Amino acid sequence: MTRAVVFAYHNVGVRCLSVLLAHRVEVPLVVTHDDNPAEEIWFDSVARLAADHRLQTIAPDDPNAPAVVDRVRALRPDFLFSFYYRHMLKPPLLASAARGALNMHGSLLPKYRGRVPVNWAVINGETVTGATLHYMTEKPDAGDIVDQLAVPILPDDTALDVFRKVTVAAEITLHRSLPALLEGTAPRQPQDLAGGNYCGGRKPEDGCIDWRLPAARIHNLVRGVAPPYPGAFTRLQGSTLRILRTRLEAGPRAPLAPALYTDGSGCFAACGDGGTLRLLEMEFDGAAFTAADFPARFGAKPVSLIQNPMQPPMNADERR
Image 1 (cartoon, helix red, strand yellow):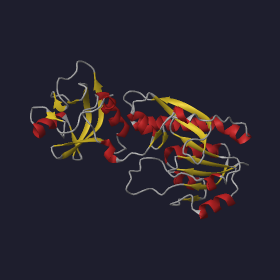
Image 2 (tube, one colour):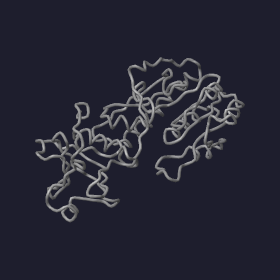
Image 3 (cartoon, helix red, strand yellow):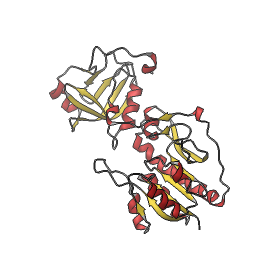
Image 4 (cartoon, helix red, strand yellow):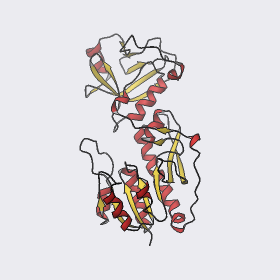
């Protein structure tokens, strides 16, 4: 029987570990993370799934610590698998697997190597992404590709919508590739890293909206960081307005400089290119905010969304 040590977390971890178990792969050890009490845990639990199957589970702070490497090596695994595990696995750990170490990444490699690939794909206005099963190397997300599956990104999809699609794509990719991996006949396609890109992590403050940007760019940011992620926001009259859901409005360009306004039935933002966003869901200082609340808070006139009049003008690349 094939043996695999599995490093896993999040929904992709749950679904891909389930695929291994369905294919009768022996899993002598699952390495996962303890949930962070400061983080909103909206996803499924690998630890719970492992407990349901009576699998040995550990959650080390450092998976590359010598004691962890020694424990994994002593299990003599054929494969290591990493499914949305949050730490890089270093060469001594990768070398412990006789037949290779593989990762499931949430993009169509070589595009969007690195951190939070689904969020970046939405923020950048991509219309397609997917899941890629590839061999791990010391360089992140750079190893040979075994298989990948694309999913669409629709114009109003949030990152959560896309992540759910990517989770299914990951499950299908592993399910259809696993028999050939176990038989030793799976393909290996080297990546052309020059044809892709690498993205870093994102922080909550990266959701701050620059209203001078085109409406489509702002819409993509809102979609890419919408809940359960921290959300896009702007500072307005000393308070924080979170913009949680938007829609691009068709029709003539708004004559206003970047501004927030209402027509009585809804709230709108005129953006830097003259495009308009309908603001479908908002929070003001943590409380829901609608068009009905606008007059009491701001009066009848549009409210400027330019917070710093001394801010330098954008260059051409920023306006795109």
